[in-house]
Structures are given as structure tokens and as C-alpha cells.
Amino acid sequence: MASAAAVATLGLIVYEIVFGAWPAIQKFGLGFLTSSSWVPNREVFGVLPFIVGTAASSLIAILFAFPLGLAIAIFLSENFLPLPARQAVRFVVEMLAAIPSVVYGLWGIFVVIPLVKIFGAWAVSVFHGVPVLETLFAPPAYGNSMLTASIVLALMILPTLTAISRNSLTAVPKTLREGAYALGATRWEAILGVILPTAAPGVVAATILALGRAMGETMAVAMLIGNSSRLSWSLLSPGGTLAGLLANQFGEAEGMQVSSLMFAALILVVITLLVNLLGEAVLRYTQKQTAGIN
Amino acid sequence: MNFTKLVLVVGSAVAGIASQSSAQQLSGAGATFPAPLYQRWGVEYNKAHPDVQVNYQSVGSGAGVKNFTAGVVDFGASDAAMSDAEIAKVAKGAVMIPATAGEIVYAYNLPGVPSLNLSREAMAGIYLGTITKWNDPAIAKANPGAKLPDLAIQVAYRSDGSGTTYVFTQHLSAISKDFNDKIGTDKSVTFPVGVGGKGNEGVTALVKQSPGAVGYVEYGYAKGNGLSMANLENKSGKFVAPGIQSGVSTLANVKLPENLRIWPVDPEGATDYPIASFTWLLLYKKYDDAAKLKALKDFVAYGLTAGQSLSEELGYIPLPAPVVEKAQAALATVQ
Image 1 (tube, rainbow over the protein chains, first blue to last red):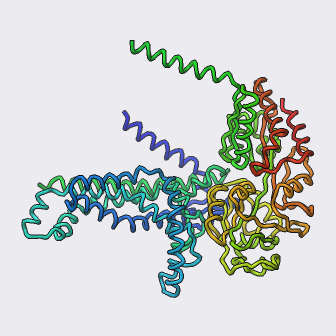
Image 2: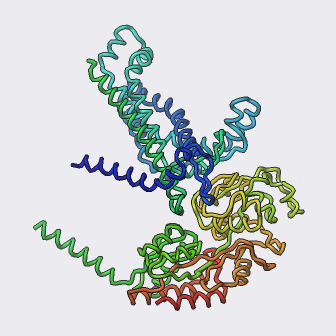
Image 3: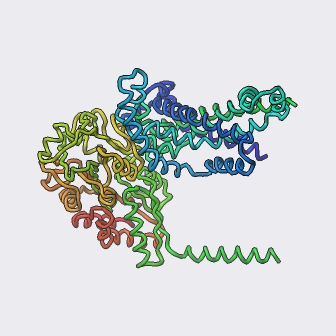
């Protein structure tokens, strides 16, 4: 009964969004996804910069969070530290998930932005003239930029990534670990050669789910990313995400702008649904794989 | 036994709530810009009239107009006065009453430059992205004595849809044909340069954080946060500093039409500050509840008279006397 209600709610949400987006879908069609100009007063709408911004900020966040999260997960699944210490670290990492998004945004404004500005000024001068890096770190170096948002996003998705990876690592059967050690492997050979490959699908699932979380993140990103509707290759430039676009403009939108924002919402829902479904599928597959080993 | 206790507790709670609702409740929703003032009016009015409670939700001009049109609030508020088409959609008819006014300033962050004159060319050029450095000749021309640094201009704008953006872009569109063609007037526009902050607070924060930043904010926010404000060139060619005096000067020279809907888009007086605008309270022409009607009219009358003395303290421009008279006349048409 309850699960039917949940499914029905999801269906209703999607139906309402499509219904609201219909005028924009009819007017712009797929060009909406490839056009770069978002000009409300001229009724020209295109969300390419926001799709790119959503993808870029999430992927860069994963780039930062993945090594860190995996390292923490390995640390927590092995006995480098006594159990109480491990539990304390695990608790702290999971507490990161309890911090509200707005608080992350505020922290980002007061702590991360000044640091990124210093880094940005250094990067612009050092990478000037270097082929690829020059475009990635092009002046002017803003504080509210893609880089700032990605750093804070990385911290926000860290708990998800760490928790699920840790679960996958501890789910590796004892027989495999003991077998590795019995064959004379050192601790790190066991971790890198046996445990990690076995847990790999679970870690991949964790990453995909963390990616899904990053794509939907609204408040913190809107406060830090600079909210610009221009497409730019530089990490130090402001950008925009679909979620941020909706949060910023929905309140005052009228007419075709509302439909376009609903269309953007539809795109966001589809992307995050697909990413999350993929993550769940991989996770399901992993559990089936490791359940058989004994 | 337990059930009886439960009934007693719930019963007393309901009685408590019921006794509160004997107070007259006035609910309004709309613009965020005048929200601090309206909420203060509500508090002060409630002190004098404990049986009237005013509840104002600052949800934005657009949402305020939507709520007002749908009839879910007693009064609305909007920085952008309703158009004829919008008024036609209101079943009970709409009366627009200017309640207070504000100025939009160019807040800037340039240590060592306490006073800055911006010509009309500079005002538009900064937001068009054609003027990119503070020591550009277009800016230096108007500031012969100042030491303008060779610093990039970091432009800040509103990322959310806002009446402030509307008034700001309306003025720049009037003074610069380029701006009108490339950017235009709306509650949210796409600027070719700069970073977006959410709300007046967001833009204020952006300006405060970066040396070389400039952003458009309401006068109250700039003053309250200690931001430097530029002197803007008006139509007569004079550089006018933002402040209560210059704002009142602009508004007093405005000729209010019958429906009290006017935008002083490009004021002509010598002492007029170029970017100032009213914000309106939206009332229905007809109210069915007599007690509510009386309380509401009394509250708005308070706002138009004694309430105006609170404006300066909170950073708003008090309405000039001729405007107050016309507003009171409009209030009298509400039945």
C-alpha cells in the first residue's frame, strides 16, 4: 500500500512537471538542450551552460571526493586503529552528512572563497602560457566559481561515498582476506590485489550514487557557484547548475519562463533518476556477486 | 483515565488557539524589498492596536501578485506595479497604493577611493562589459582627483528574479541604446559579465568580499553594511550622491497619473537621483468583511502617515507629501 503510494507520488510529480513544461517543449524542442542563451526578457531559453555546469561541478566533486573517500573507507575497514578510534572516525564522517546544505554554503563563503581566490591568483600567473591549463585557469579569478562549488560539493558527498564504500569493503568475505594472507601477501598487497578488486563494483556504485547526490544539490551550490548563464571553460569562472537556476528564478518567473524552468526541472529529474537507477543497479549486482562467495 | 487527560489537554489547546483568533488577522505577501518596513509597521501597529495582527510574507513581487490575483491574501505588495492586463485578472478589482520608495545604488569596493563619480556612459559600460578596468578613461574622466587602480572590475548582479533588477535595467535601457538592445529590461536578465548573488544580501556580500567589485543594491542594504556608494550622473549632467534627500527630490518631481503607476525612469531635475522607484501595496477594490476592511484601511493609513517616519531608519525613502495625499485618496476608494 505504502510502496504503491510512493510510486504514485513519483508518477504524479513527473506528470505535473511534463504538463508545466509542455509549452516550452513545443516551442523549443531539443534545441533547448543545445542552446546557450538564457534571456528571459527576449523569451529565448537554452540550458546548455547549466547542463554543462551541473555535470562539471558534480564530476569535479567526484574527482576530489573519490580518492579521499576511498582512502577513508579502506582505513575504516582495516584495523590500522583500534575499534573505538575507528568508530569515532566513522561517526565524524557520517556527521558531515547531517550538516544542512545552507550551512555548507555559508562556510564556503567565509572559508573556501578566500582560499580559492588566493589559489586562483597564483594559478593564473603560473599557468599563463601552458596550453591546456591556461584555459582551465583563465583570468579573471573569481571567488565564486566552479572550483569553489566543486570543493564544497566534494565535502557534501564524502559521507555517502565513504559509507557505501566501507560497507562494500567490509562485506568482502573473511575467507578471501585470510586466503590472501595465507598465500603470503603483505597487508597492502592484500588490500590492493584482492579486497579492493572484489569490492570494486560496490565502490563504483557508491561513486555513482554520490554523483547523483551532487547533481541534485541546490542551496550550497547556488550560494557559491556565481550563477552565471555563460558557458566558460575556466574553473575559476562562475558557472550555473540546473538546480541553482530553478532555485534562483522560479519565484519571479512568468509565462514562458515558468515553462522553460519546468523543462529544465524535467531534464534534471531525468538525469538524476538515470544516475541513481544506474547506481542502484550496480549495487544490486555487487551484492549478488559477493553473496555467493564463502 | 489516560483518554480523559488527553481530551483535557487537546481541549485546552484548541480553546487557546480559538481565543487568539478573535484578533483581526491581516495577511499580506509580496516584495522582499519593503518587507522589513512592512513587518516593522505590523509590529508598531499591533502595539497601538493589540487586536489587529498583521502577517506579511516576503515571497517576492511575482509571487505576491500571483497570490493577490488568486485571492489568498488580504493585500499584496510589489516593486513592479501591476499592468492593466494583470489588474483585469483580479476578480475584486485592484487599487495600487505607493507605500514607500527606494533607491538603487552602485556599491563598490575600492580601498583608497572614498568618493566615485560614474557618468552615464560608465554606468552602462560596466554592465555591458565594455569597461573592464577601474582606471578606464571613461571612469577617470569624471574623477580627476581620484587615484583609480589598474584593477579589473568584478561585476556583481542579482541571480534571482527581482524588482531591483527590473528598475535598474529599466534605467540603464533608457540611458543607453546599446544596453537596451543587448540586455533589455526585466526582473532577470543575462548580463555578459559578472557573478550572480542571491538577493540584495548576496550582491552585498559579493561586493564586500572582493576589492574591485561593484554591484547594484538597494540603498538601505548599502548603507547598513557600510558599502561605498557611487555618485551617479543624472539627465541634467550633475553627479548626485545617493541619500534620502536626492531620493525625495526625484519622487517629488514625479507627476503621478490617475492609477498611481509611474516609473521615474530618467528623472530630469538637477538634484534628482537617477535610479529611484516606488513600491506598491495592492488592495482589492471591494472587501466583503467589514471588520477586516476597517482594520486594513486603518493599517495602511498608519503606514502612509506615522509609518513614514520609520523609513529613514530602515533605509527607505519617505514618500513626499503630494504622493501621500494621492495615496490616501486612492485608499479612500477601497470599499
